[in-house]
Image (cartoon, rainbow, N blue to C red; front, side, top):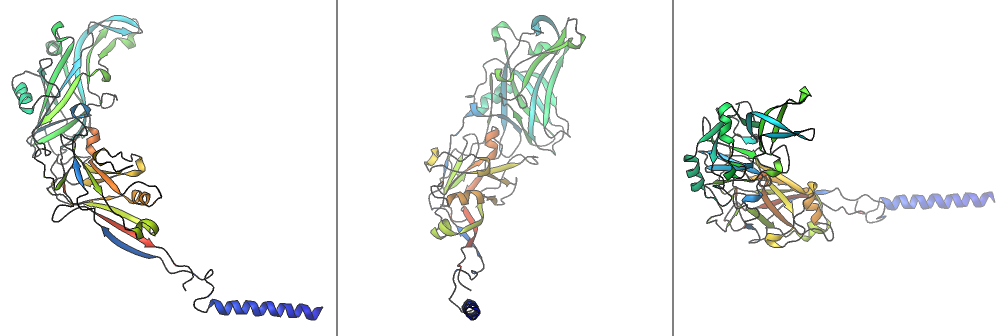
Length: 413
């Protein structure tokens, strides 16, 4: 019995020794040997030639959530207008009881969203417009004529240190009559807006009438006779959702006579670009994408609002399906990226889209196409109207830089 056990142990030892010998022999034990080191490579993928296009008309003037006003900027002159319904100034509800309001002041306020932070003496001028004189169909020349022939209600002097925030005109005494309305005006008041500063400049004012933070306001302020002394001061405020008409017009629209060999973003016609790629099968099917970066080269120097604290950016989104101009976009926060454009330069814009590129590798994933927009479009537009080279340009067309890892080969020592 003891002799049999010894023999069995000896056979096991020989078997183990034999396996150990074979592990060191090339080409054997493929399930146990380590694979090759990961190989990292870089490649540049050019878009499908002729597969990139500019489309215009995604938003009209009524969709804007901002007012652009400028003076002397290279990107053009902009003027704005707005009208408010006027609340009753003779009474106000206090604790659900209508109470006489003794008006002693009025205020028109705006949310300053963007400005040139180096421009001093920034001043906005409010002109009293005839009701109905300005709407979203008005031309720049007509709006300019209105401003030249209507009285200034008041000016808004913006502190040099204020980069963004609430600004307004405040009227007292006889000046309140400048904003009172007659029965013929149906209880509404309209203003034209222009701007001046120590140098050519511009501003963007918020007009998001769905949110109190960015909404312009008009109000009468005064006293009421009530027992509760904490409620003696009251304001009859126009609700943000009641803002009637607003808009702006400018002198520059690059969509007019646009070069079909270039890509245009933003502007009055709301340009967007669609770029399509053909991802090589080796990368699409089996590579591990480490990084993917879209590069866009400007065809013209970026020209917008100088020294803008928040700047201008290109926004990039993937598409759910490639339907040309009507392609539905992927709007999840993790699938939207932006690249900064530097005013006054032709510095290429680089936008990392690694997460989206990995989505292209998934079975049934989105097509390898990108919609590019001017990010400020969602805020009602920006002064900058960027222009980029396309695949039809002799040089400088879009390109996608991808860093990827090749799969390892287990079993190769």
